[in-house]
Length: 448
Image (cartoon, rainbow, N blue to C red; front, side, top):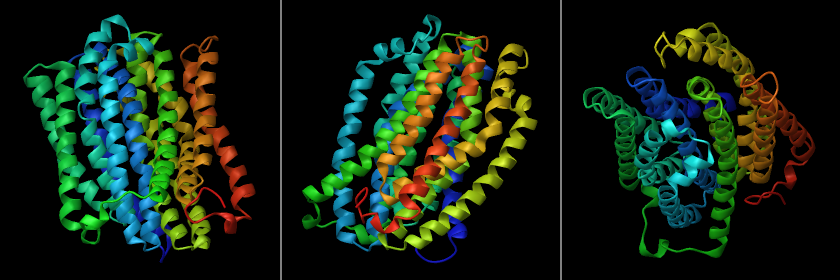
């Protein structure tokens, strides 16, 4: 990524990531559709609200892997392969340990977690069953995300796509078998997901071990220096903090939504799923941009980063305008994927949610670009600040506006307002901190 047209390079790298994450979303999207259509609105609400909880927990692991992926890309761009290998060893030990800890604490504390976020009594048992099964698969999340972070750091975004296509097909087939044929309900959806995740993790691990030749390890490579440990902790923890703050804010909003009852919960669950698919491409484009920035920073080609910013803005505007238009036109038909046409109130609320939020997809597109930019150059604190502004505004406004005549509609409007404020801060930081001070950005530090 240090040579050639920035737009083409980023797009070529992002496309497999976009397709891959679409397949990854299929895990929970298929769970939601099949459960909603064949089990009922209560089951849809249980899986949807459980998804918010599991997303928060897995976001910590995914954030840790994303963070070290940026460090991997910088070492790769600078051609410091020995430090690259050492950072892999440190990452396996550090992130693996955190994954085990999260799995144990989450499973033992599942009742406390469900009560904390106002899970309705009628959904408590099914949500608990779903979550416990999914939580046992956190090790697969760790293996897959660390392996793919490594592959993407060296410019290979295609292999993770292949692994996810295979596992997504397995997930769809098992969902149909477990939920419809065996009648296992939400537990069947969870079993299908965890098995599919295990397959993708195994495939990613085998490929890295057998095919990434320059990171073959010898006994002397198995070491942990304090310098590399500090870098791994800084990049992984700060990115994980950003991801977990983002998803914790979403989880707090989910807790608020739960107070409005099953109908609103079901509509919100479907709306959030639609959002996650609709703006996922710009999220992945932001992640691809982070790798582009990191490699060029490692190669000390800072002018190319500024070129990349301009081309990324154009791409985001075009894509989000098209996506918003399509979502608005087909919102009712999309909702019918999730619930039967007899669920009139759920459909109406879901369409209302989509009509408010989808207009402003371009705002979250810019936000993902800023996340990628600041992660890629090592200004991880700025990514965290943007997340706090975006989610903090969203949570506060959601609680305030929902107490007015707007009711649940106040939650819908809090989302784009949070995006807009964070974007404004991102622009100010770019102009003041980076626009005239690129030479002050340290090679691997946050700032010189």
